[in-house]
Length: 87
Image (cartoon, rainbow, N blue to C red):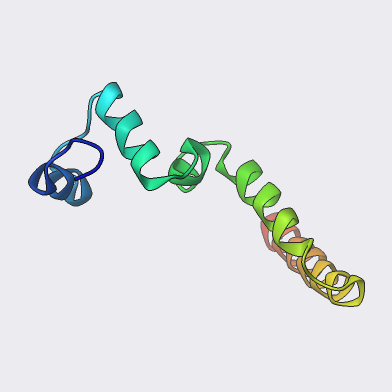
């Protein structure tokens, strides 16, 4: 394996039976060629900030008209979520 970790070790990490030490975690992140934010965005407290930023980058490749429709849908979903929380 190109990051110097055995497939068996990677498998134990994937199954959650082991958690890598810092140096091995860094090697895994580099090997996956992703940011730590991307890797942990579903489990860290501020992961939504990363996802919002990622969504913004994805919208860059969409026409202005479609961006407007997508953002209207998101705004509606946020409004509905707030109403449910308040009610």
